[in-house]
Amino acid sequence: MRDAVARDLLHSGDCAVSVATGPHATDATDVPQGATPIAAPLRAPGERAIGAAEFVAQQSRQHERTWVIAPETDGVLAQMQRAVDASRWLGCDGTAIALASSKRATIAHAAEHGVTTPLAFAASPATRRWVVKPDDGAGAVATRVHNTRAAALDDMAARRERGETVVLEAWVAGEPFSLSLLCSARGAEVLSVNRQHLAVDALGAVSFEGVQIHALQGTDARMGTLRTWAQALARSFPGLRGYVGIDLVWHAQRGPVLIEINPRATMAYVGLSATLGRNVAAAVLDAHDQELAHALA
Image (tube, rainbow, N blue to C red; front, side):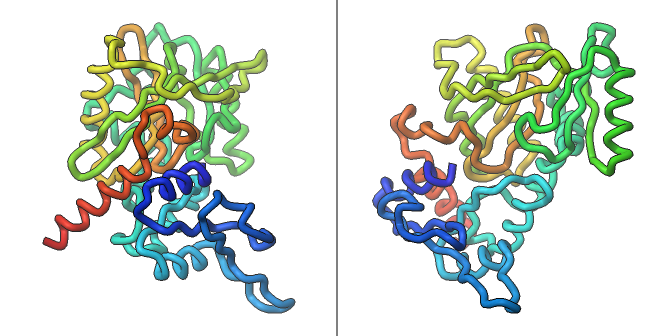
C-alpha cells in the first residue's frame, strides 16, 4: 500500500516524495524509484530511541503534506494523526478515526443515523450464525463464526477473560464487498466497488483471501444504491477525508449492510489507479488542497 501511494504521487508530476523506511534500510531500492528514503537515525547504546509518532511529527514539519499508511489497531493511526498539523495531514480527522477504530462504536453510530448494520439482524429469528472479532482488529484477524449464539457468547467471554476487547455481531448473509471512497467536505465519491474473498474453515475461523477491485461496473443495478448509500454514510461520519475503505455485505432483502469503516488506505488501493485510469493519490491531494484553500479564503 505504501509503495502504491508513493508511485501515484510520483506519477502526478506535482511533488517530490519522501518515503519512510526501517532504520536498517540501506539504499534507495527500499522505496519506489524516484522517492527519497527517510528513516529515524540509529541511536548509540544508552540513547533514547525516537518513537514512531515523534518521527512522523518531525518529518511532517519538513514536508508540505503527510500521508501515513498505518492500521487503526491499538490506536496507531490516531496517534499519528495527533502528531501532524491538520493542514498537512492527508486523511480522516481525529473524531472519524476514533469512531472507525471501534467496530462497536462504528455500527452503533451508523445505526443511529439510519444506516443498516448487523444490529438490525440481532433480534431476527432468521439469524442463525454469529461472529466474534476484535473490536479494533484489521481484516479477518482473530475472527470466528459460530452456529449458535450460545457458542458465540462463550467465545466472547473466554476472550474477555484473557483481556481481549471483542464484539459479538449477527453474521449477515450475503455478498461481501468493499467500497473505495474519495471523501471530502463535499461528500463521498465511489471510486470502486470491490469484491472481497473470504473463507470460513470447519472451525469457523474467517480468513481474508484477497480482493477483486472494480468488481461491479456502472451497468450493475446495485451501483446507484451504493452511491446513494455511500453519500448517506459519509454525512454520518463528517470527518472522513481522503481515501477511505468501507466493508459491507449486500443482503438480498436489505441491500448494503455496513460492517466496518477503514479510515485509511486499504488493500483495494493497490492497482486501483491503473484500473480506473485515474491517479487516485493526485485526487486526494487536490481535494485536500481545495478544502484548505476554502478554509483560508
